[in-house]
Image (cartoon, rainbow, N blue to C red):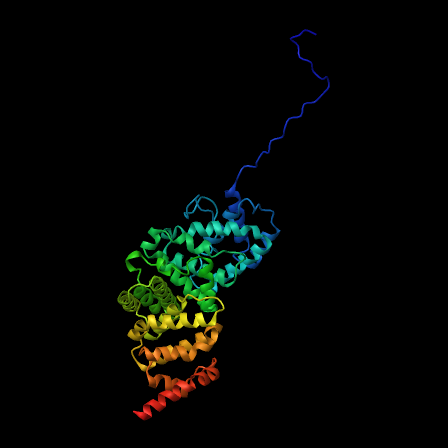
Length: 411
């Protein structure tokens, strides 16, 4: 053998790696087959479900196409909602009347399909996301049908459909700006609340990550609390309006508390703090009672406690009350608000072991600083209605009340 010849192994078969040859995609044939099942069963969803169950159609490959047939009656053009070539049937969701009675059977039908083929939920998400991102391509009547279907899908707890699939895709500026999203979501809310509670709706909104941003459904020019209340009140969704008002109220309380905590912790000038409170109250239209409660919370939260040293804690609390008495006095402008402050002090002393024995001392300090009037203290002592720790606090305050009454008699 010459040096140029290469040695070979006689009789050895050289194996070549097999290639995975994918079958060509044919969504059109799949769509036509599903349409034919609808036509053969004259739109009877019970019979259609059984026929689909017994078929050997490739749902894992053509899941999106299946839901296009369910919603529109046939295949749609790639990336759009426009009908594509091929067979169509007249029993789709968008061909039905816009009523829950006629759309609900389609939801129940899909529930059966998804129980047998749970992997199809991703395809349902894909199609719904595409449709909801393209609301402007549907007629008003069709958008209403989609809203009803979506509400019923959540009401029936359609297998695994995540709320973010519905809400997030719609929040596109062009859809919101045209008012299409507000119209859709209003119909959705109304339909869903027929069978479900407001708490159920809020739960869905939270999971969809829109609960704190309901105004984003409104066009930017109408994105105000007043428009929110007016719109949904007109649509009969008063409970939603009340919930939103409560939510906004809580947010404003939290913001005010945060701003005051910073100022009091940094020992900002009293006049500046008072002005901050006045401005916040004006902007948020906060009730006087809530203002008094917040002020007390913020003042006591800023106390520098010193572990288990009871005397130092007592001195720190009383010093804080004296320092910020002017702030309390500015907003405790009548007997009702003074009584509310006393109830607030009572509750904190009841709930905080460090303050349990300080109740009479705090009340005495508030009296000395002209925050609490004698009549308010006596009224609480005689007729107070909050039972939390009352028996203990009444007994502790008795010597001070007795002193007040004796001083009044001497005068």
